[in-house]
Length: 221
Image (cartoon, helix red, strand yellow):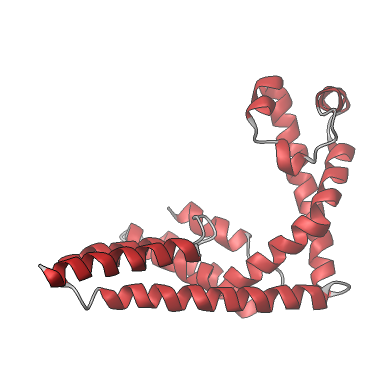
């Protein structure tokens, strides 16, 4: 469970304040020493960190997809072992980026385990190189574009949080559905974590309408 929190720390974008990153690292070290800490407490820390960095992460991911993926692929081709590179190029006839194809079924079937290991190593090195490139962009040449995306994602997050709060409030309206609603809220909030599926507005709205309907039926009974 602590591994997931460490993954979240490793994905903190360079634009997030040093104080937040340092606090997350301190929390990780403290939890690693606490043998009695519960899985729920670790989940809560992961969720809290994820919620704090979520707009930054989404903005960073957008610019990485736009500017980093091609750099990543170029670095990958330069780093990959020559014999595996030859096999990869023969297979990848349409020139797809490694970012988009390394997890597909065809990829898994095409390469031998030792080739996949070499590809994964080269990919990790290429990702580090591409992230360094994007780190420079979001703090320099593309700072304004990043900040525009950040603002849009902050607004997106606020709307999501408001609707999740609406759903949570419905737990106070119906004792019958209270526990179930709070369970749904918990799942949505856990989605802020880097390692979990993002909460989606349409899913939250669907649950709100679902419970409104069931409460209306209950009131008419």
